[in-house]
Length: 219
Image (cartoon, rainbow, N blue to C red):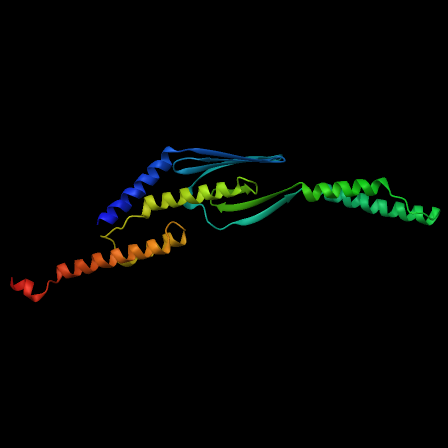
């Protein structure tokens, strides 16, 4: 019971600290800007690019752990670069057939430059799909910090809501709850086993109290 009391205290202490601490992280690359404002209960996310902006708030507990990947590139640079490379090919072939020498075309240099811009000027994202919208996290030096902060606050929120053992609930339902918390990454396998053992011991004691041994009945 002492261990359980300490666990309950730790859960509420953790979520109380999270509620008090607000953090803001900003990412910028090319025309893309993302802002993450970590509040007590929700993440406020904002994305701005050359097409406009979007912003929404989402509870940490509803942010999935699964990631998808996306690479954004400006295809205009690619198309122009390819067009100029083709033009330079025809021009250089014409010079060779007419003059018998191979000369480097200006279009070739421009084509190489524009295609290099296309290859280098790209933005890579990790994406978290939520019911409120998609969260784009730019792959830069802050990428891992943002993901870790999201997962940490999600874990704290789930534990504050569901981390305590409800001994009045059906033990199978309680065990299913802790299995779900394990799947969400909120608890470890050892913590799940600890909760399972506490549930088993509590209900075994309850059964013994309800059905005392014959010698206790005589006394």
